Image 1: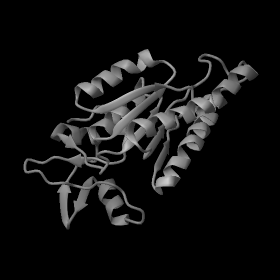
Image 2: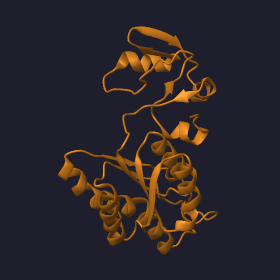
Image 3: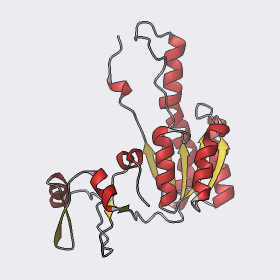
Image 4: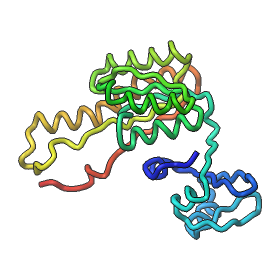
Length: 219
C-alpha cells in the first residue's frame, strides 16, 4: 500500500517496490556510515548494489512504496491517535501488521481511524485514556495485556501546544501546567505504566514524539 505524506515523515524507513520485487532494507544502523552516505547522496545500497534514488520519500511513494519492519503481530499502544501524526503513525503500524490499542480521551474522535484500520484488515481496539491520569495509563496497559497478551511498543504522540494566540507572558500558570501535564507528565505516566510489562518480556520499544512548537519562543 502507498504511504500518505504524513506517514512518510513519521517513519525512519522505506522499502521501494521495483518492477521485480527487491527488498531494500533502508533502516539506518548505528555506525553504518556508508549507508548514511548512500541516503545523503540519493542512493540506497544493499547487498553490494547501488540503485538510483531521488532522496525524497515522495519519489518512493510514486514508485509504489512498501515496507517490512518485522513488526507483524507486535502489540503497539499509541496515544493521541485521532488526527495528524498520531493517526498517520496508527495507520503505518497497522500496515506493518501490528495489533493496536489506540488510546485517547475522545473515543468518538478515534472512531474514524479505528474504522479505517479495521476496513483494511487490521487488528485494532480503542480505550479511554487520559495520559495525565496515571490510573488511566495503568488501566490501558492492563487492557492491552488482557486483549493481546503483551505490550511490545509504546508510541507517545499525545500532546498539545497550549493556548493558541497567547504569548508566554500572557499564558497563565494553570495553562502552562496543562501543557506540562500533557506533553511531559503524560509521557512519563505511559512509560511508567508500560515499562514493567516490557521488562517482564525482556523486550520493548518506546517512542516519544515531540513537536517543534516548544522550540519557538513566545515571549
